Length: 321
Image (cartoon, rainbow, N blue to C red):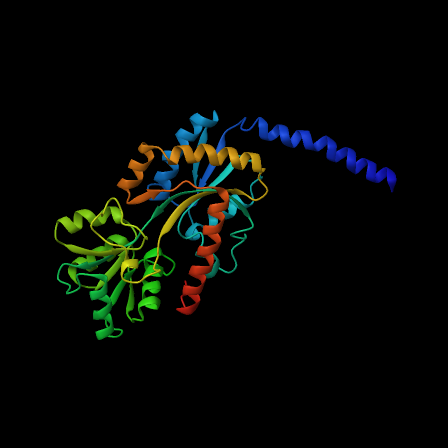
């Protein structure tokens, strides 16, 4: 028994400097950043904006690997099974904290399978109505919905989409009733608002709202974030009317659970530097998003809070995929 214990101690002493050395020499080969969505979307754009700049700071190529499917579950599952050595990263998007409540059988633990690196950016949905709508403020829309219980229609591009969930949060907090009308995608739902086919829509992409407002086709009533957006400075937060309201999606970077803390720290520092550049902020503003860049601990708090928040909304409203 003593001989066995001595072997364990010797093994521990032998492995400790190797582990430390791996962190000190990191990275010494290319790094894969998995994006669990298709090319061309905001998550992909953000990843491809960060990758070359992170390549410069780390001295190793960061390769973006698109793995779309099942609302991000496919690519996220691949990252969860990867070696926790800092050579696989995952760029998550708004469905990440929502999926546990919609897909109870996902093959990973949304919290415990990953180590947070940093929250990169946040994007706010915008509450819009057609130009012919009598509603000119969030309060007007709520009053209109209360005067016509269940008669108003809202556009939805998926039960787990941020626009749909944000509308359900509005329903809960404002005490109103309306009908969610499904559309294939955001362009179709936007067209439906403009034509008057539906009464309102919480659109996920703020970047497309401004031109439509200027053209007089729609009216923007409020944003889901707690602060006004640079791309829509004249549109107040919905929280100004409903205190405590917040509906925002985000993009953040995770690593497989067990990735050494020194590597997480190095990645966090280098990525946050990129996120806080004026150049990166300009890219995000064009997409209607806001740069964040926080600590792993702060990102962890946000992930856990959003999982609980959206699980409650999904359960209370009986939302199913």
